[in-house]
Image (cartoon, rainbow, N blue to C red):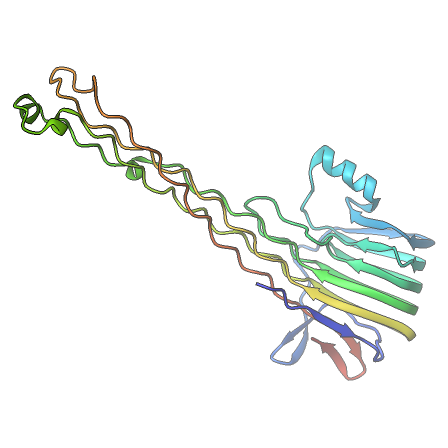
Length: 305
């Protein structure tokens, strides 16, 4: 299923947005604060120059090399963190990308200058581990006094994890037993084929894999730009794809071969065991995430889509 991509060009006046805004039946209400309130990681800096990939992770800004080393040593942590980061100036080069990693992030600055830089919730192709839903894109709040230039903001949900494999085969999937040899017919020479038992039947197909896990929602965005005559944000909302279904389970065991004409030891000279059944079908894909709101506020109220 293809993603629906929503691209917004916001050239209208953007003024202070107070708090998180919910839209219900076209009425705007202030969302109640979370209980208990999350711990906020607060940092103050002079300037931030984003001229490479930077990741907001484990309490700080990490380079690609630092991020790779952390993941290699301890795996990717999936807990959501809440940040409030304040700067004098933020500068994005064309190569600069800031990944918020699904966290709840407030970026405050006196000045923002962007030469076609990017703010993104997750890297493209980010996938949840096996058996996990994709993460929500979190929330990004930009509170800027003066902004200029072109800045792309990509709200992307994490893709859902793959479903679990189909369960192991049990006796219900075992193939049928082969035809036994018939001593009476064989001895009398009436039917020579009766002297030899048949091999067992093929096992049944394995169990189907379990469904893939749900893709993450895009996350939300609020913009508070006080002076923005030269500022051109491009906003994209990309839902996380549903995860692929789990692989099918192993096919059932082949059936036992038929008994021989040896009455005391019927399994001596018995027919061969049947072949294993085919692998089960893969599970269905999980559901995609959904697009969430982008909000700005003016004197008339909140504008959300």
